[in-house]
Length: 212
Image (cartoon, rainbow, N blue to C red; front, side, top):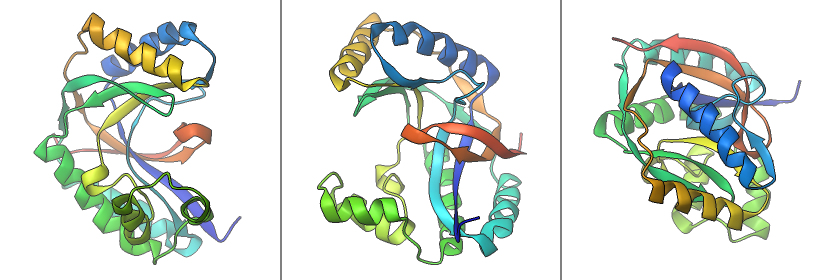
């Protein structure tokens, strides 16, 4: 094993929302070549809360902390906002309610200390050779090991990533115009997960039920 372990903390969408996501992912994939689509077999539908690398000796503490947090976080309501596209990724964007944002901040702040200031080689290299991150995102990478936290956090469920970003933009524009009704749903579980390429979740390590 490596000295550091990458762990993704996710909200698990309800069964009904997962069904909608899988169906639409398959539908939109007909528009062009994709790196992946969610299917809950190889690539799991999810909403990322936080992702970073932890020292190996902290991994058991990560499990323990998330288990305790789950006992203090009530089930969360998800309300669809729009279809989004970002660098070829297409999916559902949800309203960042006070409850969701509070849960996100609690999870990030509780786990961040276990990171012990570590920043992954991926982010160190990208910050050195590219300008893809804003100043605020660079600050978040330094302080939390991940750019999409706090103000930058937006709850979303990715359906697919297109190889051609223009195709993704056309798909999200089309489906926003169609005004497809994505039903409100609840998040009743959080989980620790394994990550694959392109921000995918390729395995669920441990699930925790939230408070009803």
